[in-house]
Length: 215
Image 1: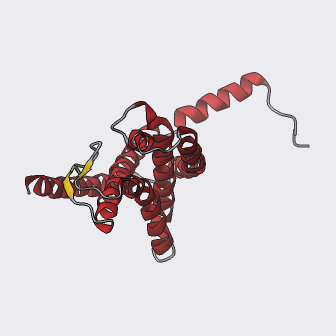
Image 2: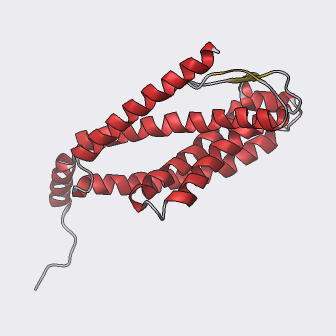
Image 3: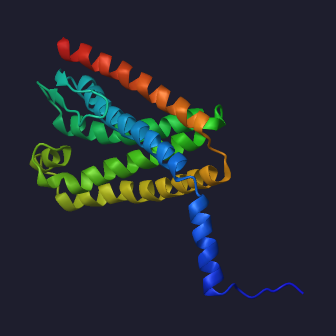
């Protein structure tokens, strides 16, 4: 008869160690790094574009903007007749643009549906954390909102409402990626393509940012 009892601690420890030693850590780190690069660049871009769009819609004039890939950008608006909308525009765009991209594309291109879900989760987490924890510096978006009269507890509550589901979504999607790496569903070829695509994107965005800064 088969033995249905759990293995003893020594046997379990040996198997666990063997399983850990066989996990493709190099491939997992490479995929995690390139995904992190994409998430960071796109999160900052969607947030900063929201400030500029809100300024344009409310009659403001963008004096300067920094869209360098990966940089902590800024958008200076003068005159700025509706600063509340301009500041909130970054958070709204930073969350709604990724969500809209997922809603529009995930059925048509199911291959990247998981990537879009991870982007949505990361943008919710990053924007929510920034809103909730950014009150210590007057030049942050949160600091500007505080100077405009928004109560900090309200901003913290909104930030947490964004960050918590974002964290849960990121955790789910990263778990699925780890499983795919372990089972061979994610290989070096696809990781290499992602790195090349990221390099091309960063170069293109940097060129556009430099052209905007020179105007």
